[in-house]
Length: 534
Image (cartoon, rainbow, N blue to C red; front, side, top):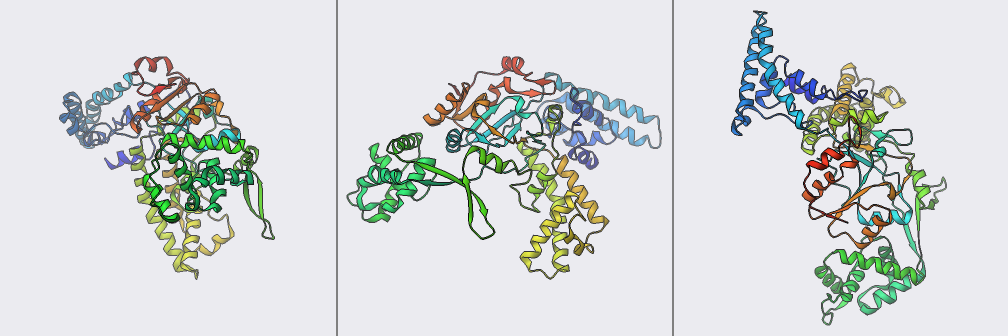
């Protein structure tokens, strides 16, 4: 059974990347159920699911408990078939008899696919509302990370707004690399914000003045930045106080003494709502009308003489900086996540993406795969680290860092590529190289929660065709989406509802046969949306 389960976990059922019009998953999975020992695995609950990649069919006990007696009976017959095949070692004619006993169960499980729609994929980009507003001002999204996910298990992190794109965004090319896993590519660089004197004067007069000595007027510059980008800092206290005052929500300040007492009162009484961010947008417009100007610049490092280098934070400059980075840019050398990102192969064609779609698995299956990987990665990492520490005169921190780099080089297959490797020839033998190769193979074959597309350009918001936003999304967010031409927008109240709304975009789903094939049939089966369409 362990051999059977190991073959499944190691990717033997993964669809080959060069098969565009044929999905081999079902025949491979069903065929594997005819193999010797598979009856034992099926009874124990380790037969690959025909409907959910990375999951398993129910065990015999589970089927009996749920009243699926036919399935349980066929599992028992398959188990008997295993016994006949084992006895065939002594009496060869029993082998085909055992195989025949296993065939009904294989056919029964494979038949479940008849009522299951094509395993779909969808392009999404998650973003928070404040960066969304910043992207509009910038003129687009610089080199965004686009998740190619399963609508049944969409990506739910990295932002409470989901922008949904057409299948064409998942087409690999030199300018649109598509990775077979989360590639940990570069994120948008954070710009340094500067405001002019008019912006500071607006804050001092309109925001700070009503509170007299309870605020520090030197914070006006920082408060102006908060008004501009919606970020949070200690300068947000007077902004929150003014918002509450304007809305009649500020407690009586008669008995407040000093700045610290004022700040504590505001913190204890402020409630973050959609209205607060709408109010901030109003103040931003007023600040600009009053002559306030804001400039943003990107820090590019230092010159040889130690002088800081900057460029204006334009869309073009951000794209130039981000497009240079590839997979693993956000990972750390020697880390399991960063290394996996670097070994994940890139797709060459749209057909590759579609045929590999079953590698996109549920979060629970992905966590199980990570645990399996950790079981072989951690001992290898510890062995190399201890060997480096013992064989060098480096300080502990330096030795650990050197070990991390060496582990990554070994797994990437770069052993011998760099000069520093020469000092570790005594600890790297054929056995170590074989372990590293096994880990690399496991990393490449394990499931993933999503593929990642990383267009090396600016992506306009108008390229997206739908959006899913929180029920309390700001007016500015809804305006941005509307002006970008995104008319199909659903609101959600909670995470469960958010997850269900991805299925309201069947026209954006794509699968093995091509693009958008699920639209008509899926729309007819789905229930009416729970969210609100605008």
